[in-house]
Amino acid sequence: MIKFLSFVLTSFLLCQDIHQVSTFIQSAIVSAPIAPPAATKECPNDLAATCDLRCQNGDYVLDTKGCPTCACISNASVQRVGRPPIKCPLYKCRANCGLGGYVVDEKGCQTCKCTSTSTNDVVPKPSVDCGARPMCRMFCENGFRRDENGCEICQCNDSPQACPVKICQNTCLHGYRKDYS
Image 1 (cartoon, rainbow, N blue to C red):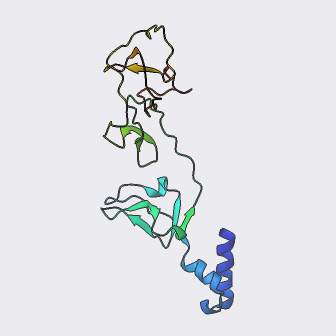
Image 2: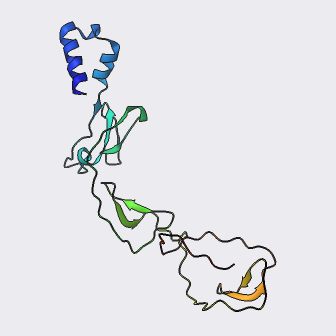
Image 3: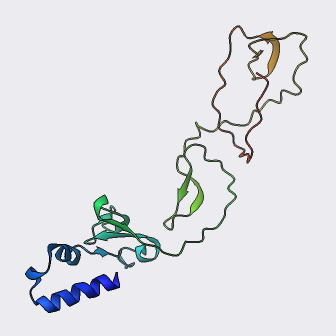
């Protein structure tokens, strides 16, 4: 990039008239990507340290307070630049946020706060302990029926039962154990 700018300046000085410089170089001078602004009193988020985008002409998306965010108004004006990776703390959160996931802070690090306050996508642990699976002296092609507590009983299902999609409160590295149904 420095060599390119040096070339542009040299060309400009040699020609002494910007109109004689090629249109390619003119467009490079006019629309060079601009780094995000540093933090101010009004906009305390330091994008210069946390944002890896460079938007042409400084066209950053503004938030509701009028402060720039780490997003460009036009995707055509985006340029990514390398920066040292941010070391995020590793949290072992009590909550499993299900499908919603976790809130990410201004540095891009995960927090233990859920993005959704709804727990509809999390299946609670059963409050009833079914104990050992009943020893039924029958074979059921479509699996056993369940009682009102969700425990298997010695009666056969009339038709195959679809397994419900569940999101457990426990996270298991190697997957989940399935029941016999």
